[in-house]
Image (tube, rainbow, N blue to C red; front, side):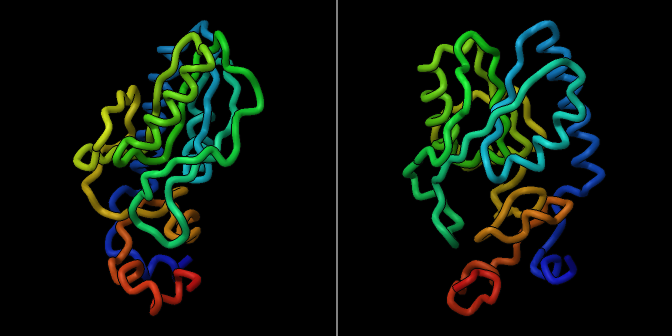
Length: 192
């Protein structure tokens, strides 16, 4: 882990801050969905660690499903703008209360695509829960119902978020040193 931590410019959100806020989100979700058929739809891969901790803080019956979406390719730090479903849900969401669980909302393009797609499947309700929100980067209007943290426009990794499939296992959210992604051909961590 120390090898990965040396690539971090600063820790933005500590493990303790993450766990405290996730507990608060779990209570709010439990309250808002009490007595309802709740389905959490996790957007892979980045959202899986957040989902794992969040479900332990939701104290009402619920089920989970997964979607894999791509709008980044390889060692990119900016979305390509082209969104593709790589893995779809296993079950119908018709008539269910669906809560999308996302790691980070940046431009809003990906979440806009997902919500438009899921709305066509006739859920009873459709809301969004994100761990991290970058409102300064928003290009597409997206209503976010549950937000863990609003963060500045910095490239973050850790706690499920990656750069070129690395750093997901860091127990905090940190800002990646720019030299780790600006000189792609020279960086040993890019896989290039």
